[in-house]
Amino acid sequence: MPELPEVETIVGGLNKKARNQKIVDLWHDWPKYFKQIGGEKIFRKHVIGKKILEFRRRGKNILIHLSDDHLLLVHQKMSGHLLIGRWKKNEAVRFSTNKGGLDKSWSDQKWIPDHPQGPLTDPMNRFIRIIFFLDSGKMLALSDLRRFAKILCGPEQEIIALPDLALLGPEPLEISFGEWKKLFDNKRGKIKQVLMDQNFLVGIGNIYADEILWLSKIHPLAPVDKLKSKDLKTLYEATKKILKKALRLRGSSIDDYRDAEGRLGAYHTKRYVYQRESEPCQRCGTIIKRIKIGGRSAHFCPKCQKLYKI
Image 1 (cartoon, rainbow, N blue to C red):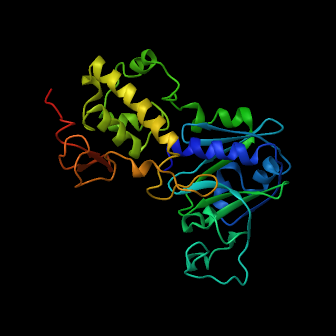
Image 2 (cartoon, one colour):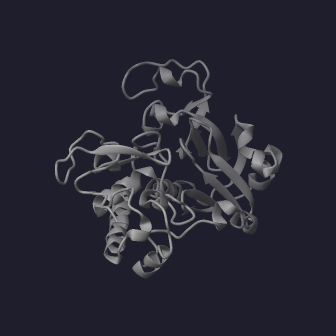
Image 3 (cartoon, rainbow, N blue to C red):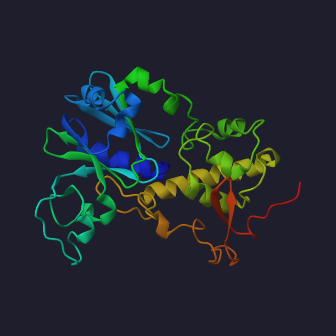
């Protein structure tokens, strides 16, 4: 699932390419996206004819501010990513195995990139489920392999009041250490699960929780209520360092994620521990291990991140 660095990267790209453009039409092939808002007819009424004023991020949500005080919320979930570009209907196109063009994996897709070369031709960008047609001739599209994305639109005050936004915790790059430390007052649970709780702190998921804990030398099973002030300080600084590094590298494309122009991020080429099971720790050489916590994997160095008995 795209986390804070991935979502922020997409938002930055969309602000450069799609602001101040009007949504003139809509295509989709998955009506369930609009179920929560009352169906496609109501959704179309909220978005068609609206001008895109700005893209913002809140946690893992993309917030598209529209004219007439409307807000379009997109949560990309497991496999979704928003793209800006041009596509055409897939009709009588010849596919090849030549590098740099559309390969045969595109042959059963309803839409294909308007140009046969470039980052949009990456096969991971081929699962086009929704297209917003813009008055500039560009298109804003959602590629979503698993069709899990959430899409909501309505008057801004109504969308902001929904639990999807109203119950979110603070942004990790926007709080002081004093505010950070206060978050942990009377908090219980295993540190990895706590970091990933979006009502506690937003934007951190499986990838960056592992990376932050490795840099902090804190075991993913460490009880939060047993962390000392110095541990919280180390954790705070590691969180900012890892997220800022991932932002500079435009996110991590281990699986589905691509940026707004269809390009891969680069953080996964520099990651310390996530999905590096059985590889040597980059700090001490000990073999990285993987355990399950609440149904999710956690990767850590058993020497650098010891779980001390309390």
